[in-house]
Length: 337
Ligand SMILES: Cc1cc2nc3c(=O)[nH]c(=O)nc-3n(C[C@H](O)[C@H](O)[C@H](O)COP(=O)(O)OP(=O)(O)OC[C@H]3O[C@@H](n4cnc5c(N)ncnc54)[C@H](O)[C@@H]3O)c2cc1C
Image (cartoon, rainbow, N blue to C red; front, side):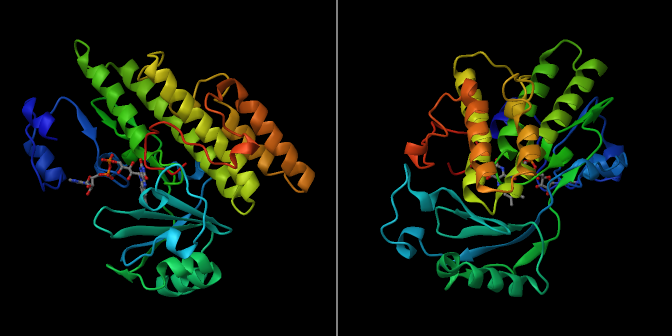
């Protein structure tokens, strides 16, 4: 923000953009960074495309004081390649998953993403889950919520358009799937890079440029959605979940390395979109996961993923000897590995 101001941006803190305010301003172009249910969606009455999404999850969340360290609750746990408790820890459960983000000052942001909601108040649901999963229960046994527990029935959102004449949305204003693979900020940065390039051009973005931006975000929202939906499908079977997640790790580690070798640009698709090897994998995986029934099916699914990612497996993923622990270099986003 300071860099933007230094470059001449007029920054107005704590200003709510309303229709009245916009009438008083003149702009050649509006970039909407207002997040879900944001400004342009309301002003232009952009229809929802939520029906396109396969992922369906609600969120039960708060911030807590006094969450114990996992290492204290499960002594003797094999140490990971980094201090687990200070990473974005994801606990996988049958009904969904729990994120646990411990800030430097000790407060922990935590939330259950749930495929289906059990009846009762948020407090009752929270206690039901802590009781059902005793290790998680022990972590949060003495934790105090710093704000009331809240439940949001569906966190996914998706619009039909991300750009039009004189405007463009950042990804979070356009679509959000789930924090599972921590795709949010990396995807936003990619979109900002694209818009930056369009504004560097003489005359700014053309209609064609904006159509390209819109199509890219649409494909990428679909890609994130199918990848996450497959993960939810596999969640109650850890071997399946771990195998499916390797598609994500293959896509991001390959992208990271391509970028370092400068063989990638802002328009390269996010999360393998457009890559002949990776592009179709999330959808193919979701399709296969829907038909997995027997132990033999599970083995065959794991073999399929291992072979499918092989051409892009640049860091030894899906190696049984690694016991699903891979230390990947500097992955973007906050996700644990
Ligand atoms: C539970 C959860 C966990 C997540 N975990 C991760 C993670 O681990 N890693 C990751 O990369 N991403 C994660 N994300 C996604 C990440 O939060 C988003 O990708 C990111 O916040 C998008 O940034 P943004 O600036 O585009 O939008 P936002 O952060 O949504 O900011 C939009 C801002 O605009 C303001 N606003 C709205 N309307 C108006 C108006 N009319 N006038 C003025 N201001 C307005 C809002 O108040 C808000 O401050 C997570 C998301 C959730 C919900």
